[in-house]
Structures are given as structure tokens and as C-alpha cells.
Length: 60
Image 1 (cartoon, one colour):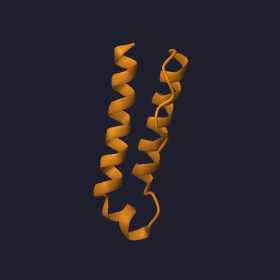
Image 2 (cartoon, helix red, strand yellow):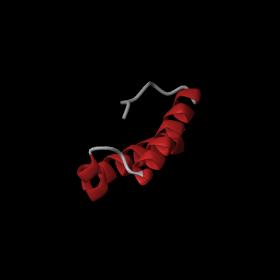
Image 3 (tube, helix red, strand yellow):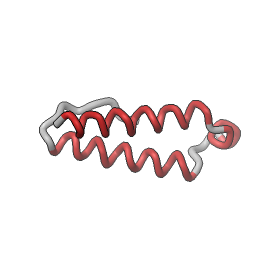
Image 4 (cartoon, helix red, strand yellow):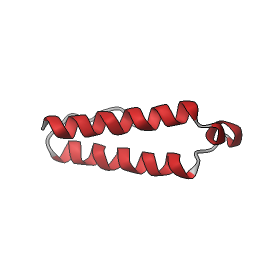
């Protein structure tokens, strides 16, 4: 189950880092295509974590 937790944490950190550093996300005040893709990856990892019996984590 550690790999599921690692995947969830990695996906969350990647999404959050992108949102902090992306010029397009800040300029448009809306998520860019990359941010939407990273959020989809995070949501899938969160869903896998819950299926594996993990506790619900923060939502993005």
C-alpha cells in the first residue's frame, strides 16, 4: 500500500507545484491544459488510494 500512498502524494505535489509556477494558470486565472491533466492524474490516484482502503485525503 506504500506505493499507492507514494503515487497519491507525488500526484498531489506535482499538481500543486504546477499551479504555483505556471504563468498561464496565473495569467488566465484558470487552469491550463497541463493543470487539468495533472488534476485528473491526482484524482485517479486519490480514487485508487480510497479503493485500497486508505483514508480520504485533501481534495484539490
